[in-house]
Amino acid sequence: MFRTLAISAGLVGLMGSGAAMALESSATTDLNLRQGPGPQYAIVGVIPAGATVEVEGCVDAASWCQVSYDGNVGWSFGDYLTTTVGEEPMILTLDRTKTQVKTVVYQENKDAAAAAGGTMGAIAGALIAGPAGAAVGAVAGATAGGTSAPDATVTTYVTEHPVDYVYLDGEVVVGAGVPDTVTIHPVPESDYSYAYINGVPVVINNADHSIVYIVR
Image (cartoon, rainbow, N blue to C red; front, side, top):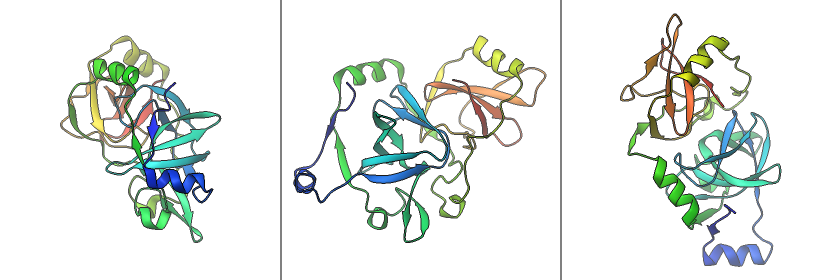
């Protein structure tokens, strides 16, 4: 069981009185649901672009939020979740006072930590925000889930030529930028390169180093 959340005493009181409710939010892009709040944790599902989730709360010092989607509970990156403030969509973690998202404290699950620790190296930088990532003006209509896949020869090459994983702050989504600090590997006779980032292979546009496809 990966729901290993410890909530502060003050928040427990609010929830017990019925004053604190899960916050409804929408995914701006296809978004990973992970076993814990970080890129090193296993992906346990994918939230489709535009889907609605219930947010229990977000970690205070990071953008990771505990969410429930389609009966599954896990963690997703809050910079790609929006909620309605007034009549406008707003990034969930941009201004937590306005979005009224609760603060939660993650209590480490030993099994999840051991699995994550066995696969993760040092954080090698940060992904450059993709669609609606930290940019309020990009929220409306920013759904990258419908991006078409590269040719099958590209994805086949990526899966048949694995490379070492790199872990970056943030989340892998279509449209996110890969920093220059990451070594990317060319796909022969194509306009693409690739890398294995945050637990998944990704196809990268050579022109601007943006992620164009996530191989699942």
